[in-house]
Image (tube, rainbow, N blue to C red; front, side):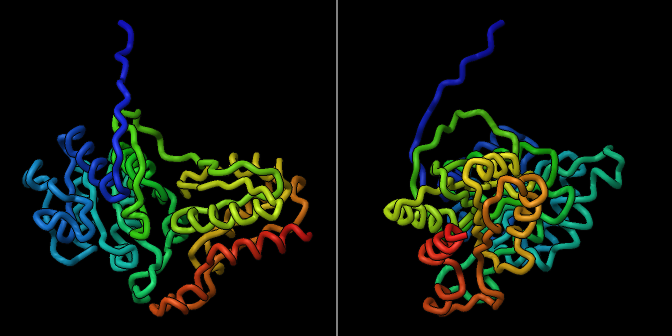
Length: 333
C-alpha cells in the first residue's frame, strides 16, 4: 500500500502559541503524556504556554508545589514507569535546586539500568536576560546541561523551532531540556502543523556569506542577524548559523562553513569563561585548523553577574554593535 500523503496545514502563531500547539499535539498523540509545573493548569501557565490544556485534557495537566526537585523527581519516576512527562520550570535559574534529579538520575537511567529503562521526559523552561530582570532570573546556563552525557539540549529561537523542537524533544526516549527565551514569546510566524516530527539536532543557516562564519543560538540569533545586515552594508558577507541544538551539536555544518570562509566567530549570551563557545572553538581547532585564516573569536557576556539595570544590562550582554566590532576586528587578521 502506498504511504498516506500528509497534507500541509500552515497556520500563524506567536512563539508562545507555537509552544501551546506543540503541547496540545503531544497530549493528543501520546496518551501516556503528562504536563505539570507551577501554575500550568487552570492559570494556563505563567506566560500562557498551557492555556486551555487543563480544560481539554483534564488531570493529565496539573499544578505542582513550588519545588523543582519534586517536579523533576516525579518526572523521572513517571518516565521509568511508562509515562511521557513534560515539566515546565518557570525560570532556567531554578534548575539549580534540582540538578540531582536531572543529572544524577534522569541522565543516568539508560546507563545504570543497562538499557532496560529509558527516561522519555522533557523539561522546558525559559532563560536569558531581559532589562529589569534580577540576577536570579537572567542566567544563561546552557553549558551546564550540554556538558552532561545522557541529556539532550535544544534552544529554539523562532516560533517554527519552538513548535518543531518541542515535538522532537517529547518524541525522544531520552531526557531533553528545551530552553526558550521570553524575549521571543510574541514573535509571529507561519508554521506547518502537520509536518513530520524531526530528530533532535541540526543547525540552520540563516544567511549565506563567504567572509566570516558566525555561529550563535537563542537570544543572540536576532542580534547576530542585525549585525550581519549592518556588516553587509560595509561589504562583509556573513555565513550565519543558528546552532539550535547544543546536544547533539551539528559540528559538521560549522566545519563546512569554516572551510568556505576561513574565519569563525561564536556568539552567545552566557559569559565567556566556561561558555559553550569554548567547546565549539576546541572542536573546530582540532578538525578544521588548516581552514582557519585567523584565530577564532568568541563574543559573550562579561564575567560578572547579570545586572537588572537596563543600561548596565546592555553593557554586560553582547549587542549587535558588539558583534559588528568583533567581526571587523577578526577580519583584520
